[in-house]
View 1 (tube, rainbow, N blue to C red):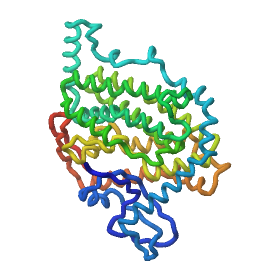
View 2 (view 1 turned 60 degrees about the vertical axis):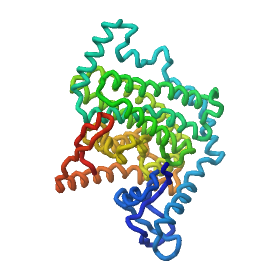
View 3 (view 1 turned 120 degrees about the vertical axis):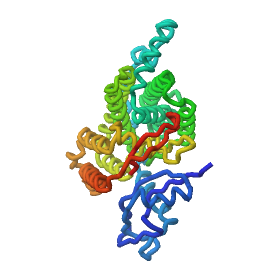
View 4 (view 1 turned 90 degrees about the horizontal axis):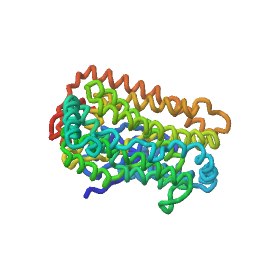
Length: 423
């Protein structure tokens, strides 16, 4: 079994030339398999600059760098575990009771997978078989590239046990007994209950469609749950709620785009399924966005510094450790298919950040900010423009290189190849 390590910066060579001062800039967090192949690939993933040296000779070695950066990063967010910070969340519990919990739907009102797919109990044998034949006929019109994105989205949703554990790591809000009566604990359980339907309905649809290798899909789900996910500042509620707010909107965008695309290809059953999931994700996004918005209201300096911390390290996707046991670059290939089809793109990432900046009125922050808080505000507000410039440059480079799509076989669809442009 491969071990994993968290590397918080990757130099472009064996050592990093440095300039001066005792600060390190532009570092990101990745949880990567410890293998020669992965280490060899790291310089191509990130190029970064360092402005200091801990050993005094102007160079920081590959071996020393992760340890130094991990210490710096932990020192930055561990301050959010101080009693006065955690008390902020404790004092917000009555507010969460009034403004967050109402966004959950009781089981009697929420849609269930059996509402959206053929139900043999309701249709009878003949009606059920006829409905399944119709479902398969419509599913046959969905292109393989879109199908791969759908499977990747479903696998991501099915790793719910991992995601349920995420807010239960946040200090001051976690469900300590598994049945706590606090508003925060009830939200975590209710949110998980609603999320549970998403993977269920997509899995049932794919089973009925007969278009995917369900055994390979199930194995990928198994491996993803066993692998877990890497998350920055995992115990801090400030950082954690920012991460989940971003992720919920990203998921809503992805499912919404999928609904639109498959609807164009005539699969109205799948479009309805993805649309129902999108609506849930939008409610969940609203809840987490409200929580972070309240943190910006009561503790703006800490909130904007936490946002800057998370965006400097990028919001990594929860399924980044996905593998089917065959393709070592499965997640990258799935992400390339999502980019190419328009299911989830770099422009969507930028758009989500722009939306959250507006929602939390980050540009308007002024009073009560420390120097560090002002720098974080300016960094975050300038980031969408930087991302847009990077998109334009990447597009220009791709046009000049005239890079051709590469056929990539996906085990999920019986090793049929999907042509993707690999960055």
